Image (cartoon, rainbow, N blue to C red):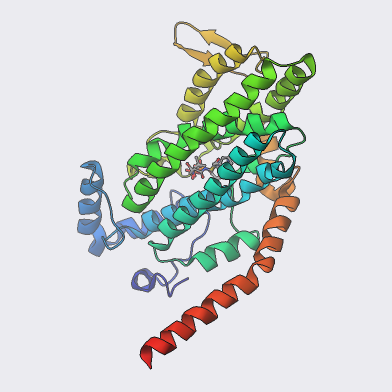
Length: 346
Ligand code: FAQ
């Protein structure tokens, strides 16, 4: 790792990424206190406050760089792993039209992963290293993709709720202070918006269909509602990264703020479908102008993050298998590039 961040090693030699990097008393705080960096830090924060974009060659605090590598790579991994639950239905989509739409959507998610790995690479880490971290189980990806898709309605629920939650979280990322991430998010959000609509369209068709189809849609909503709320991350009181990420304008809203916006947007959509949100405590608070919702089971969230969700093993297993199966393609591409270079040099 240090070879990627060599110029930072002089500040103590150990700018390895750890989950504790941004703890209040951790290295970020230590780095900020270095007298030689104080002026740079001040200038950096002033640029962020003035809404200037930070670009790859600009000076940035090491903790900012590491936060971005962490978030962007987790996001990229989520897109790639996120292809699996829906990919599972490509061969079984009910019509040719639905099949072609689903193929396009899953392909888009792969494209999002590719842009995001490229954005992370601008921060001085290689895509191969990031993928190794994922396959070795050292990197996180979104909790939501560790749930199964037993029926076609789950594909509708993913598009409606998971892409809906993704849009809520990602539109503000188009204004992220780091230029390459912000620019990647603009295209991604446009595509996510199509994804959300196709999911809602599936739900609408099922909700207006036979009693069995309506039941299938309701059961999918029951399965995906709470995990979708968990997608926004731990409550603000437990979110270790939010404060600094908001200060650096990587995040524009806290996890709870975005979760609330999602609930307020989605509940009327469920009503339009004639489906019931599986939360007996859900109610409209007219005074506050927002919905009140029941408690989230954070033990389920933590369990999934620790690798014990319903599909964690299956998802990583599938990624490892795909990586091995694609090895010959990577090797052939590298051999071809080496041959081209040798020819050009001859
Ligand atoms: N799952 O202090 P915070 C999609 C971790 S893409 C797993 O609040 P932060 C498109 C967090 O990483 C979905 N881990 O962290 C699609 C941290 O762990 P660490 C992905 C989670 O970064 C649709 C720890 O908990 N979207 O859906 C989760 O400030 C359909 C403490 O949390 C993005 O990645 C979680 N849900 O806020 C594709 C968007 N939540 O790193 C296919 C970009 C938290 O210390 C099909 N990311 N953690 O080990 C973000 O906005 C932020 O990173 C948050 C977390 C909001 C996810």
